[in-house]
Image 1 (cartoon, helix red, strand yellow):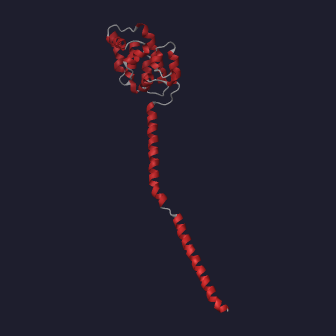
Image 2: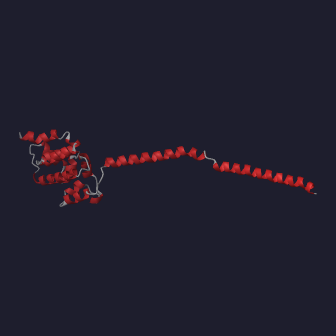
Image 3: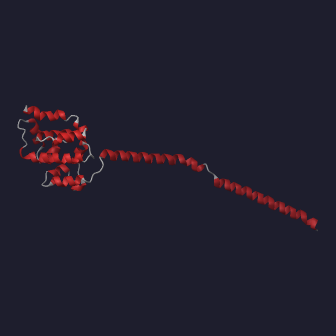
Length: 207
């Protein structure tokens, strides 16, 4: 029975990583350290990631799950601290379970470019990680979507500029005005010639 109780969270978490609320509920009611470790693995963390947070060798984490001696001993508190941080991040409702796992392993500017999991292994590190988590507002996929949208808008603007080039050549107001001015100038010349011819024609009559 003990073996089944430990293995059951493994099968139960198959669909939890896609349902944040369900994972929060499951994690909140899980107090067995090794069951917590399994949940972390299903979220996307690796043995090496968990080892970094607990300051142990990755083989140690694997041995907890594979050997008959399933007691993590003094690392129990570290595992439960990791659980608390993950619950806090999930309950904020900004990141999905897999995004939380990614955030925990990426170097963080607010932590002097250290990984949050590495900071958790330090004394008082849990407070630093929680404080750093307050700086993010949008998940990475949303930023990629925004970037794609911006590229599409820019491409549309270039397309409009390209299609607008013939439109700028079609209006030929200056040319019409120049032609009109030439026509107007020709009328003036004709009037001048008419006046000149009238004056020349009127001179003999005058005399």
